[in-house]
Length: 94
Image (cartoon, rainbow, N blue to C red; front, top):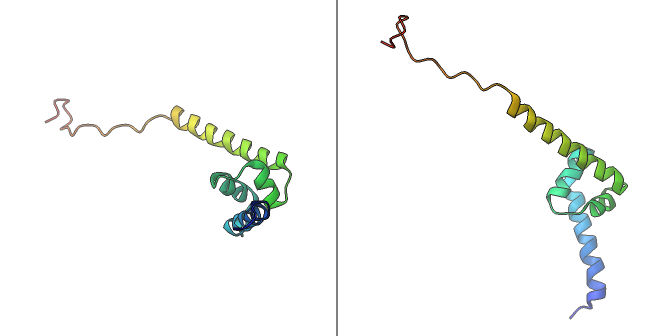
């Protein structure tokens, strides 16, 4: 049976490689968000992408603020008017 002390670094290496393959070709923001959604920690994402952890944290924070602002805007937006009942123009609905 393999020694766990030797196995762990290899597993971490494979995880980093899988993370890099998963985000290849994406823009920085999408790389970070994809890896976070996949379950990597901010520290792991920073390590995988060669960024500082503070840069990763800033991307995540800005994204959360953007999502919250979009949700708030949807709540404040007036609802579409419901179609009026068919009418002959005299108000009796006939």
